[in-house]
Image (cartoon, rainbow, N blue to C red; front, top):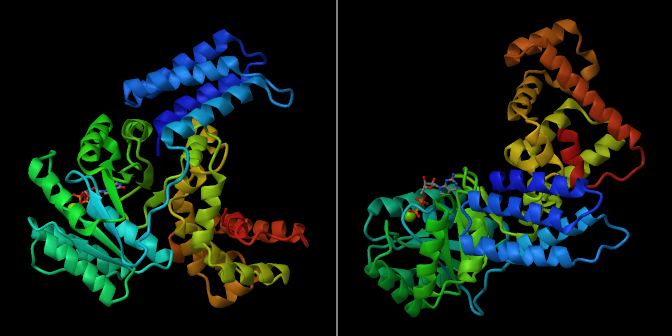
Length: 441
Ligand SMILES: Nc1nc2c(ncn2[C@@H]2O[C@H](COP(=O)(O)OP(=O)(O)O)[C@@H](O)[C@H]2O)c(=O)[nH]1
Ligand SMILES: [Mg+2]
């Protein structure tokens, strides 16, 4: 996400941190480079102008304290301004005093509303909510089917009847009430371009059911077009927040870095892929950190927490202490790490990784898959007692898993290193959440 902007900023930050003394001319030079990065990312020119002006004034006026280098102070100012540009703080969805809470999704056709409806339902499920999905795209029967398929995948009911838009919405709310479901997510019909009829339909829904949240879904790849559409939707509907989709693609970041300033509304979620789990709550401060290459440790920890079953972690930790950590357990760790998503994405969140990436050091998800299939080709006895793995057994395993003996050797070395590492840590408490991550790598 936002790779191009990140590359530009990381290099500017590196220069600033490297300067022993910061002069006005250093700052002006950095600002010129920032302007170029933002404009190349298709950020609204007025937003860029204000950003540069504000940051430059603060940077030149900054008093430098002894404990920080001048470069760090300037980087901090840029970080604060970027956070401000992205919306200051994370915004929470509003809930209805009496359930169900209604969330209305609006936006142009193809921006990702239906996909996001399912992502949001799944996100709410994980937070112990009980959503219902409903599609009021009465024009294309395929749209309803699309939502039904997604609903089935996550086991969320999709309300459907054949009635007209307003009646269907009301019935879905009744359905939620009767079935004690606490949230109704309404997926609407988009159009290729903004048209009066669509706006009227959305406005009618707004008036009739008074949703607690109207979310404008925007295709992050479309840059300033998304920002322009947002402006019109906002004028007509006065929505509550924004969802930016397709931020996994080579979206240049222009939409993300302009839309909040232009509309005055917060970004609440970002879509980062086609799969249901590819969605992130938007935290402006963390994204700003990420853009500046300072990593996003909090998101990383949350990802680990979400994918590691706490009880399982405690069980493994105790096995490690008792020196009973087998290859079987190692396999289950690999599976956990895989659940967190592509390794590239996970590592992206680690401070310093942006720099590695600039040196073209990459990680390979195939390594995890290979490790998994190697362990799966072992017998139970071998997994529990890896010491018996002699040359001929290793050759058999390599054959069975379609790898080379050297791959099997490497995996076993990694396993022994994990065992050794954790023994060295001795009585040190392994953080419940991070132990899995450590073992997986
Ligand atoms: N790469 C990527 N594709 C997405 C994302 N969200 C949606 N899509 C794709 O965008 C296309 C349109 O999505 P859809 O939900 O049908 O849009 P709608 O017309 O607004 O309902 C589909 O092919 C989705 O798979 C995302 O976050 N990342
Ligand atoms: Mg749709």
